[in-house]
Length: 232
Image (cartoon, rainbow, N blue to C red):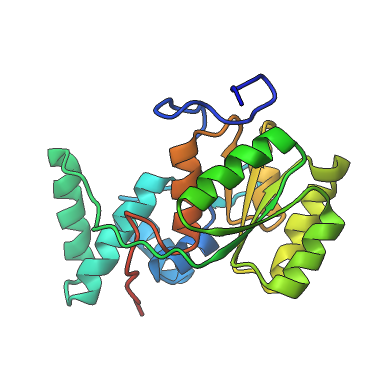
């Protein structure tokens, strides 16, 4: 099947207009640093200063999450937080990449709640290529059934699912015991999605590698965010 106008993916290797953003709660789970510590580091050292949404929510980029992972690793090894920030500042000044080794795990279930069959087919393909199990649904009612009966680790929600049901599904995901929720949309619905409880947002059309990386981040299986450190 060719890439038509209705397919919400860009070809491999292209860059989407908007990168993924992560809520502070998602970063806390992904990296193992408490939200209170993240806020303290931001206020005290002023090195990692995420953008704010219109509602005042912190919006972390993938690069900022990698930097926090770098700090957490050094703090866990016994380095004082101030010294860890100086090390990060030196890395940034030198233009040195901050990343850790890749570790993959492929037995997790992702619920994909889409409204566009073409976009759903492509999203499912890339998720299964990474080894994830995928449950694909096209309405909120079926999504709620899957959440209750199969307990997915991640729900990917199209914001416009069912003419607005995506918003309510996003709000109900955490009540159903799902660890993470990723909202995708062709609309600029970032702030609304995060306010409704989403852990991350991606703007369509999606770039496959970025989509998969975001999923792996939220599931704790990222090439950049493996082995999160616990920081008191």
